[in-house]
Length: 120
Image (cartoon, rainbow, N blue to C red; front, side, top):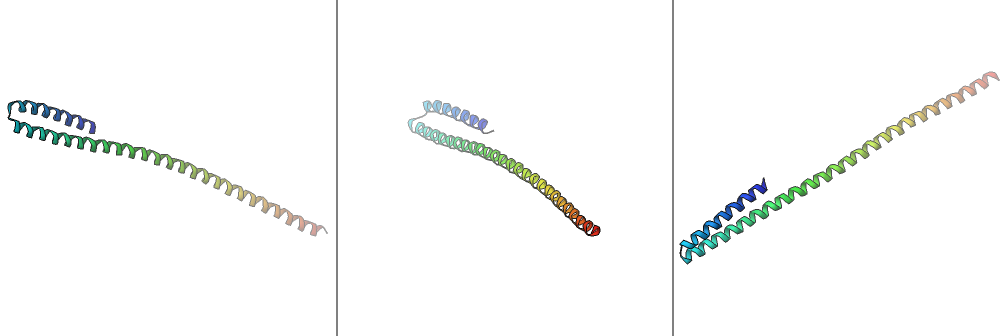
């Protein structure tokens, strides 16, 4: 976990700073300056790592948010597609029903015409 890693890095860095202070007391001034410089370099590295982990976490959260939005959009598209498919099937069914009624009506008219001719 990134947050645990950051906490461990911070704890290690604090321990190094504490040790550095103790060493500075027992060493000469030039060594003390070297220790300060090393601690500053380490602090910079720790900040860089923390920034990189924060960016990675933010990127992950943004990706999760984007993935959720895409899934919601896909669900809306699926719902829309299914609804239109049902409407199309209903339209086709009613079209066949209309064709059947037209055919029956035509058959009745033909029979009427034939029946009239036969009776005349």
